[in-house]
Amino acid sequence: MYIIFLISIGFSHYTKDKYLRKAKEKLNTMSEDETIRRLAELREKAISDELWVKAYNYKKGKNDGLAQGRKQKNRK
Image (tube, rainbow, N blue to C red; front, side, top):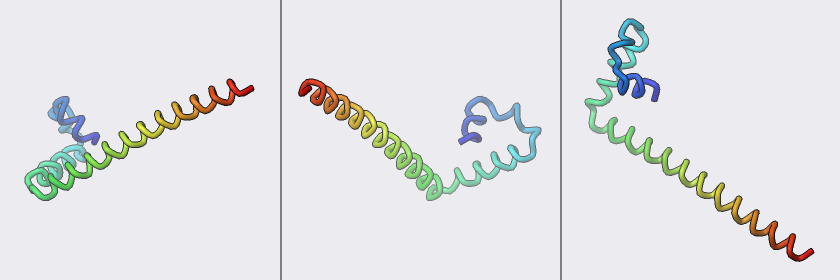
C-alpha cells in the first residue's frame, strides 16, 4: 500500500532510493499481468468487505448493548 501512496503523490521524488525503485519496477511488472491485477483487486475488495462487516457488527453490538442496558435500568 505504501508504494501506491508514493505513486499517487509523485514517485519521481523517491527514485534515489534503490529499494523504492525496485518496488516500483515490481509493481509495474505485476500491473501488466491481468491475472495478478485481478487477484489484487479481489484481495482489496475482500479486505474492504471484512472491515465493513467488522464496523457494522461493532456498531450493532454497541447499540444492542445500550438498548439492553436501558431495559435493565428501567426494570429497577
